[in-house]
Image 1 (cartoon, rainbow, N blue to C red):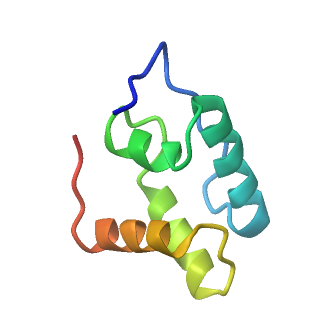
Image 2 (cartoon, rainbow, N blue to C red):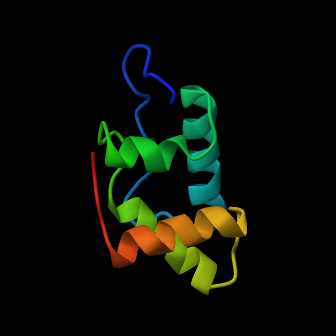
Amino acid sequence: MAALNGAAPKFAATFGMQGLALHQAMARYDKAAGFPMAWFFHMLTVRSAPYALANAVISDVLEGFQYLPARDIEVVKQWLYQPYAF
């Protein structure tokens, strides 16, 4: 389990962001946090990424824009169907 050392990065995206711009914002966030899918885990724990992000990611997938591995897409889909937080 990764521990948060200091404050979580701020998710730099605007409401309605999608496609390449959203992917780039997620990649910057993950890089700043230091691990893949940080946006998702921080969305569930420290709330530094908005819940709407999960919807935007799956909307992109449905439009054919897939920037996450299939297993990560499945995790996000399952969260949308049965949300949880820590």
